[in-house]
Image 1 (tube, protein in one colour):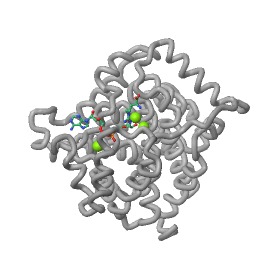
Image 2 (spheres, rainbow, N blue to C red):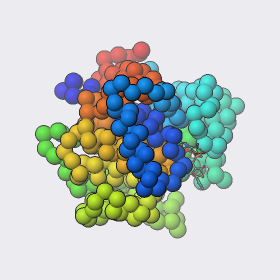
Image 3 (tube, helix red, strand yellow):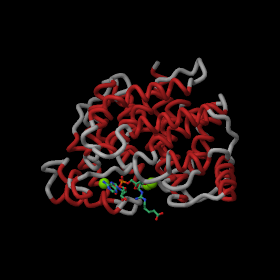
Image 4 (cartoon, rainbow, N blue to C red):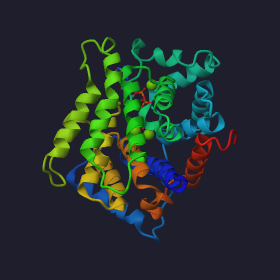
Length: 351
Ligand code: F2R
Ligand code: MG
Ligand code: MG
Ligand code: MG
Protein backbone atom coordinates (compact mmCIF):
# COMPACT_ATOMS: atom_id res chain seq x y z
CA UNK A 1 0.00 0.00 0.00
CA UNK A 2 1.52 3.27 -1.25
CA UNK A 3 0.21 5.50 1.56
CA UNK A 4 1.57 3.21 4.24
CA UNK A 5 4.96 3.04 2.54
CA UNK A 6 4.99 6.81 2.17
CA UNK A 7 4.41 7.24 5.88
CA UNK A 8 7.10 4.68 6.74
CA UNK A 9 9.66 6.21 4.31
CA UNK A 10 9.05 9.65 5.80
CA UNK A 11 9.14 8.28 9.34
CA UNK A 12 12.49 6.67 8.66
CA UNK A 13 14.26 9.69 7.21
CA UNK A 14 12.69 12.11 9.70
CA UNK A 15 13.56 9.72 12.51
CA UNK A 16 17.15 9.66 11.33
CA UNK A 17 17.27 13.47 11.10
CA UNK A 18 15.62 13.96 14.48
CA UNK A 19 17.99 11.55 16.24
CA UNK A 20 20.99 13.33 14.75
CA UNK A 21 19.78 16.88 15.51
CA UNK A 22 18.65 16.09 19.05
CA UNK A 23 21.56 13.80 19.90
CA UNK A 24 24.31 16.04 18.54
CA UNK A 25 24.57 18.43 21.54
CA UNK A 26 25.44 15.43 23.73
CA UNK A 27 27.97 13.70 21.45
CA UNK A 28 30.98 12.50 23.43
CA UNK A 29 29.29 13.04 26.81
CA UNK A 30 29.19 10.60 29.66
CA UNK A 31 25.61 10.80 30.91
CA UNK A 32 24.93 10.85 34.63
CA UNK A 33 21.59 10.10 36.26
CA UNK A 34 20.98 13.85 36.60
CA UNK A 35 21.66 14.43 32.92
CA UNK A 36 19.09 11.81 31.98
CA UNK A 37 16.49 14.08 33.54
CA UNK A 38 17.95 16.98 31.59
CA UNK A 39 17.49 14.98 28.37
CA UNK A 40 13.91 14.08 29.29
CA UNK A 41 13.07 17.73 30.03
CA UNK A 42 14.79 18.85 26.83
CA UNK A 43 12.64 16.46 24.75
CA UNK A 44 9.48 17.43 26.67
CA UNK A 45 10.17 21.08 25.97
CA UNK A 46 10.64 20.48 22.25
CA UNK A 47 7.27 18.72 22.18
CA UNK A 48 5.47 21.82 23.45
CA UNK A 49 3.44 23.41 20.62
CA UNK A 50 4.53 26.95 21.37
CA UNK A 51 8.14 26.38 22.33
CA UNK A 52 10.51 28.63 20.40
CA UNK A 53 14.18 27.85 20.20
CA UNK A 54 17.07 27.92 17.76
CA UNK A 55 16.94 25.39 14.92
CA UNK A 56 18.69 22.14 15.84
CA UNK A 57 21.51 21.69 13.37
CA UNK A 58 22.20 18.33 11.79
CA UNK A 59 25.68 16.84 11.53
CA UNK A 60 27.70 14.65 9.14
CA UNK A 61 25.29 11.78 9.75
CA UNK A 62 22.46 13.61 8.01
CA UNK A 63 24.69 15.37 5.47
CA UNK A 64 25.80 11.95 4.20
CA UNK A 65 22.34 10.35 4.49
CA UNK A 66 20.98 13.12 2.27
CA UNK A 67 23.69 12.43 -0.30
CA UNK A 68 22.90 8.71 -0.35
CA UNK A 69 19.21 9.50 -0.90
CA UNK A 70 19.95 12.06 -3.62
CA UNK A 71 22.25 9.65 -5.43
CA UNK A 72 19.53 6.98 -5.54
CA UNK A 73 16.89 9.46 -6.68
CA UNK A 74 19.04 10.94 -9.45
CA UNK A 75 20.54 7.61 -10.58
CA UNK A 76 18.10 4.77 -9.85
CA UNK A 77 20.51 2.47 -11.70
CA UNK A 78 22.95 2.92 -8.84
CA UNK A 79 26.07 4.93 -9.63
CA UNK A 80 28.53 4.82 -6.76
CA UNK A 81 31.01 7.18 -8.36
CA UNK A 82 28.20 9.73 -8.46
CA UNK A 83 27.48 8.99 -4.80
CA UNK A 84 31.15 9.48 -3.90
CA UNK A 85 31.10 12.81 -5.73
CA UNK A 86 28.06 13.93 -3.74
CA UNK A 87 29.80 13.03 -0.45
CA UNK A 88 32.86 15.04 -1.42
CA UNK A 89 30.92 17.99 -2.82
CA UNK A 90 28.82 18.15 0.34
CA UNK A 91 31.90 17.97 2.58
CA UNK A 92 33.71 20.84 0.84
CA UNK A 93 30.53 22.92 0.80
CA UNK A 94 30.01 22.49 4.55
CA UNK A 95 33.07 20.97 6.24
CA UNK A 96 31.93 21.99 9.73
CA UNK A 97 29.31 19.33 10.24
CA UNK A 98 31.30 17.27 12.75
CA UNK A 99 33.06 14.85 10.39
CA UNK A 100 35.87 12.79 11.89
CA UNK A 101 39.48 13.60 11.00
CA UNK A 102 40.07 10.32 9.21
CA UNK A 103 37.19 10.28 6.76
CA UNK A 104 38.27 13.73 5.59
CA UNK A 105 41.47 12.12 4.28
CA UNK A 106 39.30 9.91 2.09
CA UNK A 107 37.37 12.90 0.72
CA UNK A 108 40.60 14.76 -0.09
CA UNK A 109 42.14 11.78 -1.86
CA UNK A 110 38.97 11.12 -3.85
CA UNK A 111 38.96 14.70 -5.06
CA UNK A 112 42.69 14.78 -5.72
CA UNK A 113 42.56 11.56 -7.77
CA UNK A 114 39.46 12.78 -9.65
CA UNK A 115 37.43 9.76 -8.44
CA UNK A 116 39.53 7.43 -10.56
CA UNK A 117 39.16 4.49 -8.18
CA UNK A 118 36.44 5.30 -5.67
CA UNK A 119 37.42 2.46 -3.29
CA UNK A 120 41.18 2.98 -3.12
CA UNK A 121 41.36 5.90 -0.66
CA UNK A 122 39.12 4.10 1.86
CA UNK A 123 41.14 0.89 1.56
CA UNK A 124 44.27 2.82 2.55
CA UNK A 125 42.78 4.07 5.84
CA UNK A 126 44.26 2.84 9.11
CA UNK A 127 47.39 1.33 7.57
CA UNK A 128 45.36 -0.57 5.01
CA UNK A 129 42.91 -2.18 7.44
CA UNK A 130 40.12 0.24 6.45
CA UNK A 131 37.79 2.09 8.81
CA UNK A 132 35.50 0.22 11.18
CA UNK A 133 33.84 3.46 12.27
CA UNK A 134 30.05 3.77 12.20
CA UNK A 135 30.15 6.29 9.33
CA UNK A 136 28.93 3.67 6.84
CA UNK A 137 26.03 2.57 9.02
CA UNK A 138 24.92 6.08 10.00
CA UNK A 139 23.99 6.99 6.39
CA UNK A 140 22.62 3.65 5.11
CA UNK A 141 18.85 4.07 5.74
CA UNK A 142 17.95 5.38 2.23
CA UNK A 143 19.31 2.15 0.73
CA UNK A 144 17.04 0.05 2.95
CA UNK A 145 14.09 2.15 1.76
CA UNK A 146 14.93 2.30 -1.93
CA UNK A 147 15.46 -1.49 -2.12
CA UNK A 148 12.64 -2.37 0.28
CA UNK A 149 11.37 -5.08 -2.07
CA UNK A 150 14.69 -6.39 -3.31
CA UNK A 151 16.88 -7.84 -0.58
CA UNK A 152 19.84 -8.92 -2.72
CA UNK A 153 20.11 -5.58 -4.50
CA UNK A 154 19.90 -3.85 -1.14
CA UNK A 155 22.84 -5.84 0.23
CA UNK A 156 24.89 -5.23 -2.90
CA UNK A 157 24.19 -1.49 -2.90
CA UNK A 158 24.76 -1.14 0.86
CA UNK A 159 28.14 -2.84 0.54
CA UNK A 160 29.26 -0.64 -2.35
CA UNK A 161 27.97 2.57 -0.75
CA UNK A 162 29.79 1.79 2.49
CA UNK A 163 33.11 0.88 0.91
CA UNK A 164 33.50 4.40 -0.48
CA UNK A 165 34.68 5.34 3.02
CA UNK A 166 34.72 2.15 5.13
CA UNK A 167 36.35 -1.04 3.84
CA UNK A 168 37.07 -2.87 7.10
CA UNK A 169 34.70 -5.90 7.33
CA UNK A 170 33.46 -4.61 10.69
CA UNK A 171 32.60 -1.25 9.12
CA UNK A 172 30.85 -2.90 6.17
CA UNK A 173 28.97 -5.51 8.22
CA UNK A 174 27.84 -2.84 10.69
CA UNK A 175 26.30 -0.93 7.79
CA UNK A 176 24.67 -4.13 6.50
CA UNK A 177 23.20 -4.90 9.91
CA UNK A 178 21.76 -1.39 10.23
CA UNK A 179 20.38 -1.62 6.69
CA UNK A 180 18.76 -4.99 7.35
CA UNK A 181 17.27 -3.70 10.62
CA UNK A 182 15.71 -0.67 8.90
CA UNK A 183 14.24 -2.85 6.15
CA UNK A 184 12.89 -5.39 8.62
CA UNK A 185 11.22 -2.68 10.66
CA UNK A 186 9.84 -0.99 7.52
CA UNK A 187 8.19 -4.26 6.50
CA UNK A 188 6.87 -5.21 9.95
CA UNK A 189 3.08 -5.06 10.07
CA UNK A 190 1.17 -2.94 12.55
CA UNK A 191 -1.70 -5.39 12.97
CA UNK A 192 0.18 -7.55 15.45
CA UNK A 193 2.51 -6.41 18.23
CA UNK A 194 6.12 -6.52 17.08
CA UNK A 195 7.73 -9.78 18.13
CA UNK A 196 11.09 -8.44 19.32
CA UNK A 197 12.59 -11.89 19.81
CA UNK A 198 11.71 -12.92 16.29
CA UNK A 199 13.11 -9.62 15.02
CA UNK A 200 16.51 -10.49 16.52
CA UNK A 201 16.28 -14.03 15.13
CA UNK A 202 15.78 -12.66 11.63
CA UNK A 203 18.85 -10.42 12.02
CA UNK A 204 20.91 -13.34 13.35
CA UNK A 205 19.93 -15.42 10.35
CA UNK A 206 20.62 -12.66 7.83
CA UNK A 207 24.05 -11.77 9.26
CA UNK A 208 25.33 -15.33 9.13
CA UNK A 209 26.66 -15.41 5.55
CA UNK A 210 28.56 -12.11 5.92
CA UNK A 211 30.34 -13.02 9.11
CA UNK A 212 31.32 -16.49 7.86
CA UNK A 213 32.67 -15.02 4.66
CA UNK A 214 34.85 -12.64 6.62
CA UNK A 215 36.39 -15.21 8.95
CA UNK A 216 39.82 -15.00 7.40
CA UNK A 217 39.94 -11.22 7.41
CA UNK A 218 39.01 -11.19 11.05
CA UNK A 219 41.79 -13.60 11.94
CA UNK A 220 42.39 -13.47 15.69
CA UNK A 221 39.45 -11.19 16.40
CA UNK A 222 36.01 -12.46 17.44
CA UNK A 223 34.71 -14.43 14.50
CA UNK A 224 31.11 -13.34 14.59
CA UNK A 225 31.05 -10.06 16.49
CA UNK A 226 27.67 -8.89 15.24
CA UNK A 227 25.99 -12.23 15.83
CA UNK A 228 27.52 -12.30 19.31
CA UNK A 229 26.10 -8.84 19.97
CA UNK A 230 22.70 -9.91 18.66
CA UNK A 231 22.75 -12.81 21.11
CA UNK A 232 23.56 -10.30 23.85
CA UNK A 233 20.56 -8.22 22.77
CA UNK A 234 18.38 -11.35 22.92
CA UNK A 235 19.60 -11.99 26.44
CA UNK A 236 19.11 -8.38 27.57
CA UNK A 237 15.57 -8.32 26.17
CA UNK A 238 14.65 -11.54 27.92
CA UNK A 239 15.62 -10.28 31.36
CA UNK A 240 13.40 -8.32 33.68
CA UNK A 241 14.38 -4.72 34.05
CA UNK A 242 13.14 -1.42 35.11
CA UNK A 243 14.19 1.78 33.41
CA UNK A 244 17.73 2.13 34.70
CA UNK A 245 18.62 -1.42 35.49
CA UNK A 246 21.06 -2.97 33.01
CA UNK A 247 22.38 0.49 32.07
CA UNK A 248 26.04 -0.20 32.87
CA UNK A 249 25.80 -3.66 31.39
CA UNK A 250 24.48 -2.27 28.11
CA UNK A 251 27.36 0.18 27.88
CA UNK A 252 29.82 -2.59 28.67
CA UNK A 253 28.45 -5.25 26.33
CA UNK A 254 26.92 -3.28 23.43
CA UNK A 255 28.80 0.02 23.79
CA UNK A 256 28.18 3.64 22.82
CA UNK A 257 31.24 4.30 20.71
CA UNK A 258 32.08 5.72 17.31
CA UNK A 259 32.91 2.21 16.04
CA UNK A 260 30.29 0.25 14.07
CA UNK A 261 30.33 -2.83 16.36
CA UNK A 262 30.13 -0.51 19.37
CA UNK A 263 27.05 1.37 18.16
CA UNK A 264 24.87 -0.42 15.56
CA UNK A 265 23.69 -3.24 17.87
CA UNK A 266 23.11 -0.59 20.55
CA UNK A 267 20.79 1.36 18.24
CA UNK A 268 18.84 -1.81 17.44
CA UNK A 269 18.54 -2.58 21.15
CA UNK A 270 17.17 0.91 21.90
CA UNK A 271 14.33 0.33 19.42
CA UNK A 272 13.48 -3.21 20.53
CA UNK A 273 13.57 -2.25 24.18
CA UNK A 274 11.06 0.53 23.49
CA UNK A 275 8.82 -1.97 21.65
CA UNK A 276 8.85 -4.23 24.70
CA UNK A 277 7.96 -1.38 27.04
CA UNK A 278 4.88 -0.12 25.22
CA UNK A 279 2.63 -0.71 22.21
CA UNK A 280 1.88 3.02 21.85
CA UNK A 281 3.69 3.93 18.60
CA UNK A 282 4.25 7.54 19.63
CA UNK A 283 5.93 6.35 22.80
CA UNK A 284 7.95 3.73 20.95
CA UNK A 285 9.55 6.46 18.84
CA UNK A 286 10.08 8.94 21.65
CA UNK A 287 11.45 6.31 24.06
CA UNK A 288 13.80 4.90 21.45
CA UNK A 289 15.41 8.29 20.87
CA UNK A 290 15.41 9.30 24.54
CA UNK A 291 17.05 6.06 25.56
CA UNK A 292 19.65 6.27 22.76
CA UNK A 293 20.69 9.80 23.75
CA UNK A 294 20.69 8.82 27.41
CA UNK A 295 23.40 6.24 26.79
CA UNK A 296 25.89 9.01 26.03
CA UNK A 297 28.96 8.56 23.82
CA UNK A 298 28.15 8.73 20.11
CA UNK A 299 24.68 10.13 20.81
CA UNK A 300 23.94 11.78 17.46
CA UNK A 301 24.79 8.64 15.53
CA UNK A 302 23.18 6.07 17.83
CA UNK A 303 20.01 8.18 18.15
CA UNK A 304 19.97 8.73 14.38
CA UNK A 305 20.32 5.01 13.58
CA UNK A 306 17.78 4.06 16.27
CA UNK A 307 15.47 6.85 15.06
CA UNK A 308 15.65 5.54 11.47
CA UNK A 309 14.67 2.04 12.60
CA UNK A 310 11.88 3.27 14.89
CA UNK A 311 10.58 5.79 12.35
CA UNK A 312 10.44 3.14 9.61
CA UNK A 313 8.29 1.06 11.94
CA UNK A 314 5.88 3.60 13.43
CA UNK A 315 5.56 5.93 10.41
CA UNK A 316 5.55 9.72 10.14
CA UNK A 317 2.27 10.25 12.02
CA UNK A 318 3.79 8.83 15.18
CA UNK A 319 6.70 11.26 15.27
CA UNK A 320 5.95 14.44 17.19
CA UNK A 321 5.60 17.12 14.53
CA UNK A 322 6.42 19.94 16.94
CA UNK A 323 9.79 18.32 17.57
CA UNK A 324 10.39 17.70 13.86
CA UNK A 325 9.89 21.40 13.14
CA UNK A 326 12.89 22.23 15.34
CA UNK A 327 15.14 20.13 13.08
CA UNK A 328 17.12 21.79 10.30
CA UNK A 329 15.78 21.17 6.77
CA UNK A 330 13.07 18.74 7.84
CA UNK A 331 10.94 19.66 4.80
CA UNK A 332 13.76 18.58 2.50
CA UNK A 333 13.92 15.26 4.32
CA UNK A 334 10.21 14.73 3.60
CA UNK A 335 10.80 15.51 -0.09
CA UNK A 336 13.72 13.10 -0.19
CA UNK A 337 11.56 10.36 1.34
CA UNK A 338 8.76 10.95 -1.19
CA UNK A 339 11.16 11.06 -4.14
CA UNK A 340 12.96 7.98 -2.93
CA UNK A 341 9.67 6.07 -2.85
CA UNK A 342 8.62 7.33 -6.27
CA UNK A 343 12.03 6.53 -7.67
CA UNK A 344 12.13 3.05 -6.16
CA UNK A 345 8.76 2.36 -7.80
CA UNK A 346 10.14 3.50 -11.13
CA UNK A 347 7.84 6.51 -11.21
CA UNK A 348 10.49 9.07 -11.89
CA UNK A 349 13.67 8.22 -13.69
CA UNK A 350 15.27 11.58 -13.15
CA UNK A 351 14.47 14.44 -10.86
N1 F2R B 1 33.56 12.49 14.32
C1 F2R B 1 32.57 12.47 15.06
N2 F2R B 1 32.64 12.74 16.38
C2 F2R B 1 33.86 13.01 17.06
C3 F2R B 1 34.08 14.48 16.99
C4 F2R B 1 34.22 15.01 18.34
C5 F2R B 1 32.95 15.55 18.92
N3 F2R B 1 32.32 16.56 18.10
C6 F2R B 1 33.27 16.08 20.25
O1 F2R B 1 34.30 16.74 20.38
O2 F2R B 1 32.51 15.79 21.17
N4 F2R B 1 31.34 12.16 14.63
C7 F2R B 1 31.07 11.64 13.39
O3 F2R B 1 32.00 10.59 13.15
C8 F2R B 1 31.41 9.31 13.42
C9 F2R B 1 31.54 8.51 12.16
O4 F2R B 1 32.89 8.32 11.98
P1 F2R B 1 33.48 7.66 10.67
O5 F2R B 1 32.97 8.39 9.48
O6 F2R B 1 33.24 6.22 10.72
O7 F2R B 1 35.02 8.04 10.87
P2 F2R B 1 36.36 7.21 10.94
O8 F2R B 1 37.38 8.20 11.28
O9 F2R B 1 36.55 6.46 9.69
O10 F2R B 1 36.21 6.17 12.16
C10 F2R B 1 35.88 6.60 13.47
C11 F2R B 1 36.95 6.24 14.50
O11 F2R B 1 37.00 4.85 14.71
C12 F2R B 1 38.34 4.44 14.97
N5 F2R B 1 38.74 3.47 13.94
C13 F2R B 1 38.14 3.24 12.76
N6 F2R B 1 38.75 2.28 12.07
C14 F2R B 1 39.78 1.86 12.81
C15 F2R B 1 40.79 0.87 12.61
N7 F2R B 1 40.85 0.10 11.51
N8 F2R B 1 41.71 0.71 13.59
C16 F2R B 1 41.63 1.47 14.71
N9 F2R B 1 40.70 2.43 14.96
C17 F2R B 1 39.78 2.62 14.02
C18 F2R B 1 39.17 5.69 14.95
O12 F2R B 1 39.31 6.19 16.25
C19 F2R B 1 38.35 6.63 14.10
O13 F2R B 1 38.62 7.98 14.37
C20 F2R B 1 30.00 9.56 13.82
O14 F2R B 1 29.91 9.54 15.22
C21 F2R B 1 29.72 10.94 13.30
O15 F2R B 1 28.76 11.58 14.09
MG1 MG C 1 27.63 13.35 13.55
MG1 MG D 1 36.95 6.63 7.50
MG1 MG E 1 28.34 10.70 15.95
